[in-house]
Image 1 (cartoon, rainbow, N blue to C red):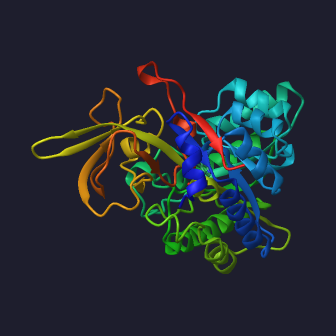
Image 2 (image 1 turned 60 degrees about the vertical axis):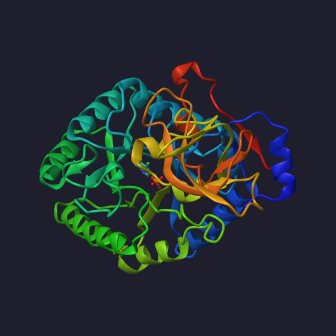
Length: 384
Ligand SMILES: *Cc1c(COP(=O)(O)O)cnc(C)c1O
């Protein structure tokens, strides 16, 4: 929801741009911190969701750690003040250069995704006379009941180590003196709103924990990953994810032993509702069967609808009084047929120059912007 002052401000600006509501961001971070602290849970922010420098600084100021998936993210996390003892590094394809960078930075933990990676990290650590702390990313084969493009925890996914390979993990850990085993890590997918899924994940984590104990390995860290979803349909009435219920499920169903730490890696739920993509209508095309609104933003600014068939609420900010509605396909200017935000959207009758907001665009939005078609990389505007 935008007040008149904000819309007037948009009128003065070139479009497209991301608009960040920093107050909404802070309220979300506060809600998450409060809910997690009830149980002493550790939250790492999954930086890949949004690494806008201003956003990173605010998130860091709430005391969260960082969950990184590239060497540059590890570097940026440390530059933005996330303590190195709160940085975790996941990724199915960490390069030697990235592993060395993280070893030099003395990060908290590598979340390791294959048996081979264990040996490589051990070798690189040994060359530096260091010990690398590792958690094993296990593929728990839990169905996240989310869109198949963003599920990650099934046997057929490329991520993590499948359970039948765990004997090889034990062998590797025994053979690698420069590794310190911290615990186990999971991440089963994104945009998960069904708490039953997390309950199932807890059951699997408990089983895995028992398995490691039976094989003589103590677990210090249980890292459950991220994935908590947001409400893309009702950003105004349901702008903050249900952190209370989320953490409560883990407190109820996870078998946490004395001295153990429970870690989370939330991305989307922390940032998605804090930004909208603001755009203008360039052209209105009325066809025989369809009407098109051609915006000045497209898949180069926000690719989620085209990449994951994702839904975003689309609003005309200039025609709020209008009674007459028309069904439009809302498309971008890029030379690709898939460059369509949504088909058949009921909107007020719209005109060239109308301002549009594409809501809930704070996660996996600006970070995926590209210069395809040699377009300018989209910029950002802040509420304060
Ligand atoms: C992307 C990712 C996350 C965050 O996922 P969200 O759905 O944004 O919460 C957490 N952990 C890992 C390993 C990831 O790759």
